[in-house]
Amino acid sequence: MRHAALIGLVIGSSLSAAIAQAPTTRPAAVAPVPANTPAKKPAEVNFREAALTDAIDFFRTVTGANIVVEWKALEEIGVSRDTPVNLNLKRVKFRVALKATLESASPGLLAYYIDNGVIHITTLARADAQMITRVYPVQDLLHDIPDFKTPNQNNSNDTGTEVTVGGDSGSGGGSGSGSGLGNSGGNETEERTTKTRKERAQDLIDIIQTTIRADVWDINGGKARIRHLNGNLVITAPRSVHEQIGIGY
Image 1: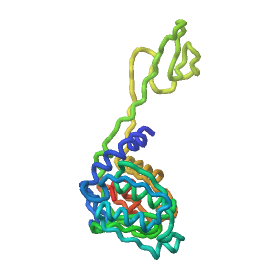
Image 2: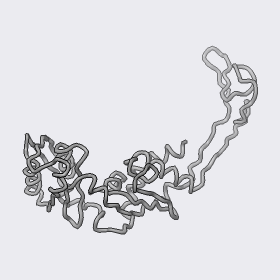
Image 3: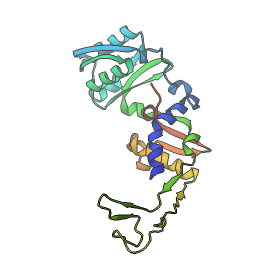
Image 4: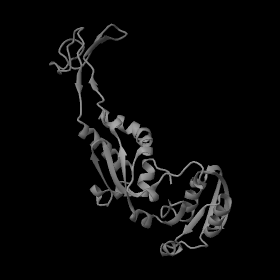
């Protein structure tokens, strides 16, 4: 369990740090957004019953970004140019403001992605239909992390009563037989349990599949999939999944 917990703690940092080196089968579609692009510029918005089309025009004007809206797809789920947007944000990144705007227009149903420098706004279902494959180097996450079991320790409480930790026979309410974790004397022993690289890779895969869009993975009936290959995770999934792993759009 410690292995899975430790991997979970570093997934947000180590895996994201590896992204810069991760090759992709579709570089134009999934390339991270450079720091100086409109999607990462700070923005302030104050929309009060603003039409969605006006809100998007505002972003075009303020950032100079190229934005394409798939209005026909949006209309199929009941979102029109006149759908009202209410939002008040200060000093946030443009990408955050745009996401919040889409969420205000239709919670959980809209998405955007960047392809060749153009921002496309569409439905989440359409965005998820485009599966992207990326290779993430995770060798650093698969190193052996020792899992130590502490030996039995005899301690005294404030009243002077001996307390036995570990279940050895003896005073202090022991269970009557040794647990096999060590001796009750002063000799310290330790057991070290290890996992194979394959097992640690599976721990990492399990964390991703249970914490990031669990419904999209093949093990749960979806189309996204992950496999471990020579210290890399090969992930085929929607853009929204790659974004949560660490790629900015």
